[in-house]
Image (tube, rainbow, N blue to C red; front, side):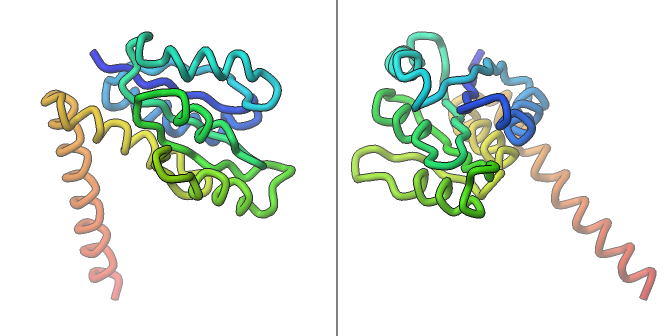
Length: 163
């Protein structure tokens, strides 16, 4: 069974990152959540990044605000796909500092970056990565996407009834 590591720089990021946790659990994908600060716990960051693949993770989702070094540092240490979630924090410059810190990675150190506070999409993307080699997860993603389609069709019907 696949497992996703979800890490964040501090507990204040948890309300945003909870959406990734919920999405992955909805797809019956095991998650392990931890706080790993790039600036306050660098030894823990190095251990986590170097050993994530040995701990059975398939993907790492890393959320961070402000300077947002966590996703990029994990990507520099790990052979796993890393999805970065820029978090709009209280010390953020409207979230742009986080977005650009995660998005603008140097060649050779990719981080898939989702929208500001976009942990839900990070969870979906992690599931899609896993689904590329796990038929059970792929079937759940197909059902999820069909549900999205049906929701739009139903919404269109309701609008047409009102107008």
